[in-house]
Image 1 (spheres, rainbow, N blue to C red):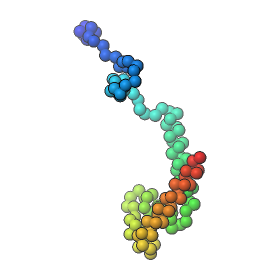
Image 2: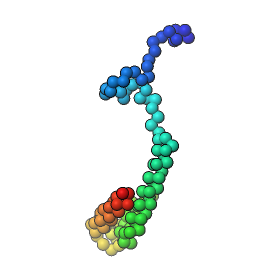
Image 3: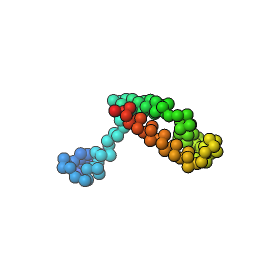
Image 4: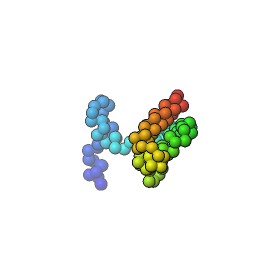
Length: 116
């Protein structure tokens, strides 16, 4: 035990020079990267705002566009393919892709405008 007390000490935060070795200092391994309470609350509010914006943007779409996005992207399991939706709606898979692309662009614009 006495040997340990008399041994060399290693500083956890040695030097204050900003070098590329900073990431490899012992103190860097002890940092807590989890968000604090205020950051966590901000993240939750932001997520809630995003969900609200998405819901509003989806409701602004026409029924066919909304159906396509819901079937392709918002289902938890067994998302529909372009060809499945084409058969269901009686149009080509290319037309489904075009509608989907236009709907995504519209949602993106609506969500960006509502976040400002």
